Length: 165
Image 1 (tube, helix red, strand yellow):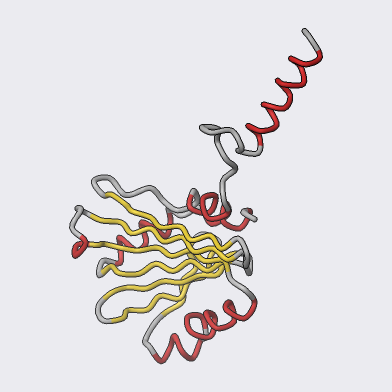
Image 2 (image 1 turned 180 degrees about the vertical axis):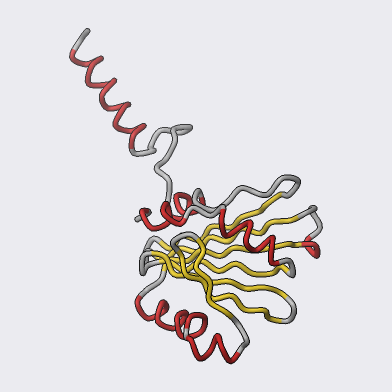
């Protein structure tokens, strides 16, 4: 093998590794990696997701909406996973995890797996929120069926979320 051929092969491999070759797989963004921890749709359901990655601030928002059918008015449940700054995490804790606030809204706290959730019923729909690894919040909302809420909570991979950086 000639030196020129060998250097071309090495250069092409490097370009592929950094995603600079058209058609080559690029490294996944933080949002894409976090989205992998969200549950697949339940049997007979579909899902749509939106990932917002702000590379400048390193803030991420992943939203997946699960449907029983394709009509938007029949959305069954939404999950929003966010990376948080210390300031935004403090505000979310004050809104969703403060004992007095949750009690005043007639909510409850539940530990599901290793995660502590506040669960509220707002306008007939359940909302649950938890903090993962002091960096992420996960909000479940939009369902009137508590069993659906729990089905999506227990199939979310919180350990994977915690390990994602």
